Length: 235
Image (cartoon, rainbow, N blue to C red):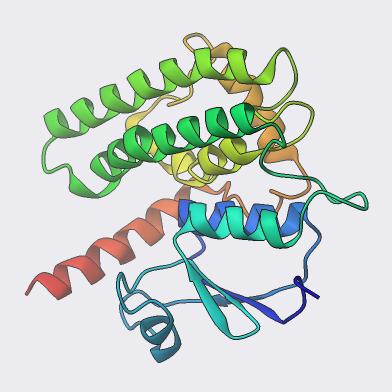
């Protein structure tokens, strides 16, 4: 059976890339073991499973590693396709699938660097403001993409959570911390109302509960831990 074999996920609880994989595993109702990694002291299992990037997430399926979050999500969707009541993450239509992949790539190309800039790389308030502006510009583009992709339905994927939803939704935990850090909502209901309503629906979805962080203080406290690890490596 193609879908046989034990599933183990190596991750970090705040990682947008790990969160998206966990949401998809939950959507598919797939049992898995979650192993929290210490990025300050990476395990031999992580280093051996992802020797190229040495990063999370890593999905171990029957002991065989699959790396890179978008690759993992598509792998899960192929091995456990949308049959017998199990939802598909990617559309069945080739053109719609290509559109979903385009917007998922856009999220990681535009939102990802802006998130890193706001949270980790900004040395001054001016640099942080510039990163926030980049994030807002990307989210405004995604507001229009949502209207196009959803066709009036609750998610980018239509009636249910799809590929673009999980890729963007993975960032929502950090957005919680960013909102507190900058003193306003990054996904602003006044500026991007459709996306703000989508955020509420995504957070409320069963597959996202307990996976997408919602405690800003806890997220920002962990940010300090990550910054300390990064500083110690730089010495």
